[in-house]
Length: 66
Image (cartoon, rainbow, N blue to C red; front, side, top):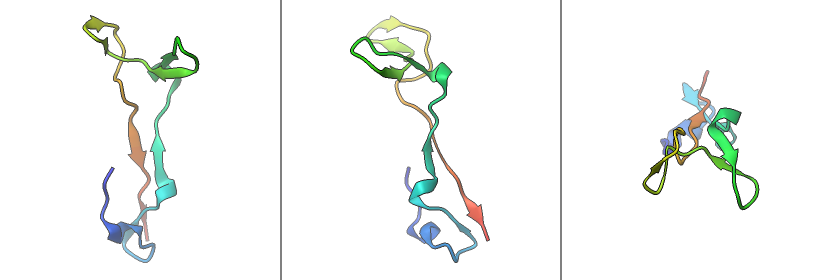
């Protein structure tokens, strides 16, 4: 995620901070990893369709207004 440096200034009309960036890691987006832990539930593994969502998790940013 790329933002303008001026958005990190809390005195601006709108602003954000590094702590306002989040990874959306909902349970339905994840699956068990055979090597331990968990990983994103992928749409494809190689050429095999698995029916998942993506091999990356969505990210979002909270933006605040003065």
